[in-house]
Amino acid sequence: MQLSELAARYRQDLYESVLPFWMKHSIDREHGGFFTCLERDGALYDDRKYMWLNGRQVWTLSKLYNTVEKRQDWIEAARGGAGFLRRHSRDAEGRCYFSLARDGRPAAYQRKPYAAVFIMLGWHEYALATGEEWARTESLGLLQKIREWIAQPALIGRPALAGAPAFLQLADIMVQISMVLEVAAVDPAPEWRSLLRELYPAAMRHRDTRHNVLLENVGPDGTRHSHLPEGRLVSPGHVVEVCWFLLHLLDAVPDAGRIEDVLAILEGAFEFGWDREGGGGLLYFVDIEGRPTLQLEASMKLWWPHTEALYALLLAYEKTRDAKWLRWLEVTDEYTYRTFPDPQYGEWFGYCDRAGKPTHTLKGNSYKGCFHVPRGLLYSLQSLERIG
Image (tube, rainbow, N blue to C red):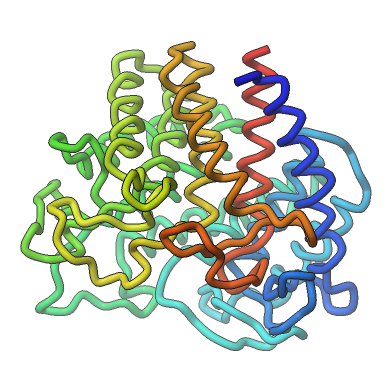
């Protein structure tokens, strides 16, 4: 595998296919914010605004502006999204909606903190791009609220019920790492690095040492609830994503001994989650004991685990120069690029069956937008530049 050829293909995909698709079809120039429910050719099939994806697109465009090129079309689109979120994304108590009508009227709540997470990240990156103090202040305030909501889910309408297991969710740890890493990168206050040191062992409580993967749900002290499907659940793509976040964390709070643990888990995610029987690719969900999952989509192949995989494998090679990561990268890249990109209309298909055939031709919905593909390609290109 020639890394220079890989870089050329990723660069072309990002700047000539993926970003032009979103810049052409997603921007609402009348009300602000972004449409994400787009058909294969970019036609709109739902004009609601989804907060996960509006925050993510503000982050993506601001990150490109900050790290690639000071393009006015990128930052103007980000400004429209950031302002729309400032005006409409929260209720009187500061809770974030899941979706809004096109003009900003509330449409739905979701009893999870993740809409707020991506709004926070979007505002934070936008503040770095523009220097607008409101965005920095609002992002830091929202970060504190999110940590409270994760600790006390009843604050966002998810009370603890008597029969419900006490689960810690891997996703909650990952999003906290993602937010704190962004703040710590520009704020030298020791509290941020102290928090990162706490989040590392919190993630490792999810580790299953038999398969070297991370379980989605464990008890507060790491207890396994193996009698429940949720307690046996592994999302290989999510494990991969968490691993590269942990490698970033260990750049911020160095600990050489821990890097080997993270790399072992990254390798375990591919060994455990790669679908050798179904034609390749990472399975969406797997039961750690090989039992049935509650998720009917478990055997599907989705776009985002594969974008995460490309970057995680490059990052692992960058840090170790171990050829095994290039071998996995070659397999993963080959599968990804014969499965997801759409040569006719640009961007990527998101949802494929186990054999790799698209089950939906849409390019965006309430969870797929301008985020995983451009972030994965951008970070992969940056890693390739560092590798040289």
